[in-house]
Amino acid sequence: MSFSDDEIERYARHLVLAEIGGPGQQRLKAARVAIVGMGGVGAPAALYLAAAGVGGLRLIDHDSVGLSNLQRQIVFSEPDVGDLKVEAGEARLTALNAHVGIEAAAERLTPDNAAWLLEGCDVVIDGADDFETRFAVNAACVAGRIPLVSGALGRWSGQVGVFSGRPCYRCLVAAAPPDAETCARVGVVGALAGVFGSMTALEAIKVITGAGEALTGRLLIYDGLAGTARAVSVAPDPACPVCG
Image 1 (cartoon, rainbow, N blue to C red):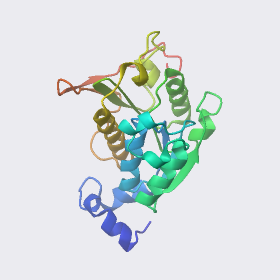
Image 2 (cartoon, rainbow, N blue to C red):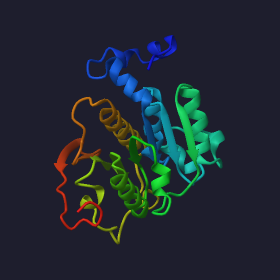
Image 3 (cartoon, rainbow, N blue to C red):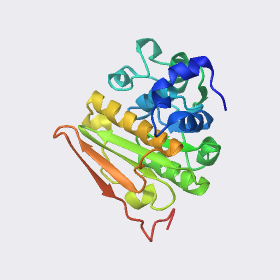
Image 4 (tube, rainbow, N blue to C red):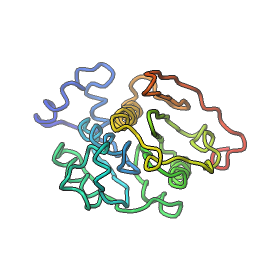
């Protein structure tokens, strides 16, 4: 797989990295990444993956852009309010990097359609804001043997982890908490979305290129108020209904 002169200049800072170089950039160009949820995590992740030269991005979200989204979902701007997120995202990402192929799926991902929505993808980023969708994404990734990068945030803190086989996301969250918080109810500082969107993009890039050590089977937890971070291991659950 060759690069045009434009691509060589565009990706120059990757090409000189020992951990990426030409072979890693070729793997990025050949990869297709699905982003489930073009929200606080998915929007900045999409920008950085497109900028990085991932060959194909599949945007999956049924929602439209709202004015309150602009506080943290930086792929959108005021003229996009009222438009479908995947269509507005497609236009913005194409303007950023015309070498990236964008697939816009204005769908709510469910257990019934998850398998075909994620079919053919090399990595999935889950930025959904409800556990029903997260569980459906995880089950489809386990069944399809697709690495899953999961990011979540609220208030001033967030987490990111990578799941490939066992343990899976359901080993971490066995059931939806009855008092699950949402950003709409408890709030979230906008810049935190940039932190975790960027981190999910970084983990996806590491998985695709083989650079460094991905957070596979681990969860990185960041407290923005305290300015502290810690990584914890996720143990496989023998009773997990998905991978056990």
